[in-house]
Length: 258
Image 1 (tube, rainbow, N blue to C red):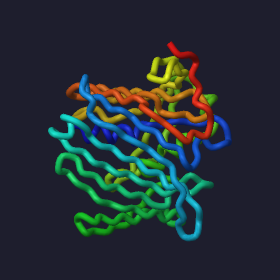
Image 2 (image 1 turned 60 degrees about the horizontal axis):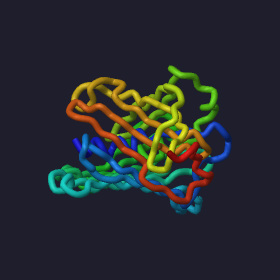
Image 3 (image 1 turned 90 degrees about the horizontal axis):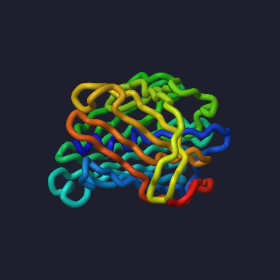
Image 4 (image 1 turned 135 degrees about the horizontal axis):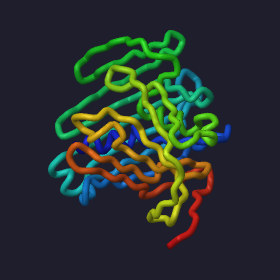
């Protein structure tokens, strides 16, 4: 179950920028504290670096997730997600997925071929290679987050409306859809922050109680940082809160400190 907790951070930390300027830049880093019920289950971090692929400068984004304390004793998680993203189109060139979740491991690398709408996937654990057809502008897990941070005209979205993108995960492409609920001021460790609320639509059944079990709060400022995530699972619930940050492109807006 805890592998789902960490995956939620990467998949549902979605945010948007209504302006043409980027909401992030190289040097940005932030960290989440993840709770499973009343237990501090672990942490997740995301960072933006510079890199070069085929003589072209790209964003290299890195996401890490890991359990701590007693949670690590019962269920060890060490996850690494990476993506290399075109600075102009925001589409990915390459992704890396190395995970160890309670003995379940995966070591994959994917190479996007945009001119052919395909992706070449190498599985280093099972020593397999495959080429799959994907829709145009398909994102991987990590690039989805940064792509959506610059989603156009999000300031015009109304409560109840949704946006969606194609996301590649586990050798298939799925529609990742988000519904806008409205705005809310929430209390954080930094103070009271104005947020936009989104609800990713997920598959009900084995993990989630229902299709709309996830809720995400995004800072309503130029950075559009994920501030809080809550999810009702088939067994228990999780909560992830922003714990720390640095290298933000814009000032982090706090309405007031209680």
